[in-house]
Length: 431
Image 1: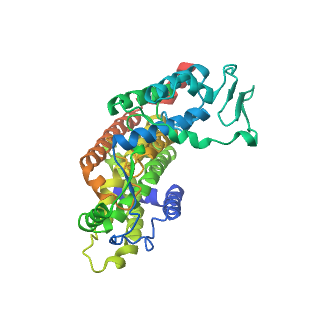
Image 2: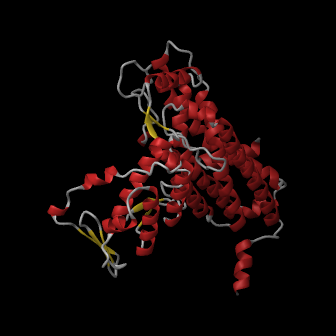
């Protein structure tokens, strides 16, 4: 216990911890999840025209909307993709334009020739593409130059809305050709199998809105819905910032390593106390902020039975595994290399994970998502339906964290015995 307190003081009295708390507060406050007083969840009233929207895999909705979108992208030869989580704007070459035209032509009643005329004429080279509205995109030595069309040639844009899928195309066949389109684009487009559902946007009716409200009332007991939205944003910050605390506390050993290496304390005891101290230091402000956030709505539901432990449960179950893995990455790679290289590793992982989660921001659940996404006040049914996936995800990261912790203990133990120094060995080989 004495060793834990020493390590804990080392963390919380550091400048890094101060920056961590300030960053956490600023980010949560900027996303307006520290005060929900203006976001009361009211029971839906019958007779309204708008109860929100949802996404469903309905072929009769997805197919026409997806082909319209693909057609629009095709006519301007500009496609947005996220191949490995990073935003990328794709401009196809002439041969790939023809491949895309084959796909659209097969799925619609528009001939390949007519489609190609809408993008470029027969005299167009790879360096110049003329769009149907008269705009030209010309390749130069430094990039592309976009030339605006004459005003008299900008009429007739409504024609694109008449495009429709052939009646004899099945949904499975349609998805197969959408996959071909996604492959031409390099993957990560709206036309991939996992993203096609984004075209299935349908309105929510009164009965569904009432069902959603009752789920929030009975399952979430209101406070759970707010705690989940808080956790969505908090987890993003914690997944990145925790690595800095792990790095900071390890780098401090550089000045006192001779003392630590000779003390009669096992490597396991020291690393366990340090790891627990870092996790505790991270979770204290998280839990405090989560209750500040949740308390702001308690007065709005005085007549209902609310869950006062929801902020604590979500902090531990949802956020803490991300804190564990991020800080474990910091501890392990710092002990292994003696450098803050873990920053590069964690920032890259965090950035890719964050961008990949954008397509499922309302409920992004997979076994290997670093930051679980649920950027919606409600959607309780989606949460409940994916609860087993969420539990699996969090347990996986807890297990990986423990493996990294054990590896950190081993590395630290070998370093105390003078048997490992990664960068020293590397430098010696170079010499």
